[in-house]
Image (cartoon, rainbow, N blue to C red; front, side, top):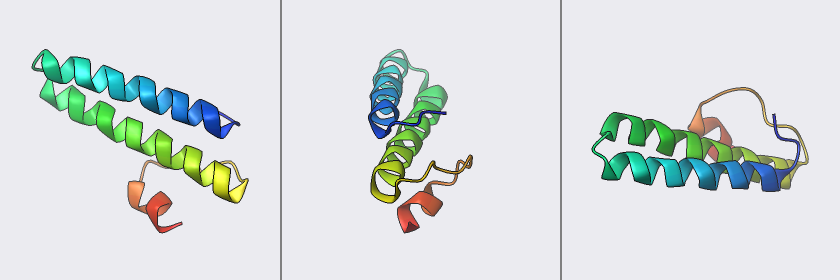
Length: 67
């Protein structure tokens, strides 16, 4: 798990680029999955940056949005 918020953002960008490639090739289910991962990692990076705490190992986007 990334301990630097910048690493979370870097991984989020990578996942987003992967989602775009999958979308363009017609793999829509996987594009949506990669978008979820991208958003999750961006939110975890923001969580780490603002709280200075390592984000919990959960995948619920609403949890991080509410925090």
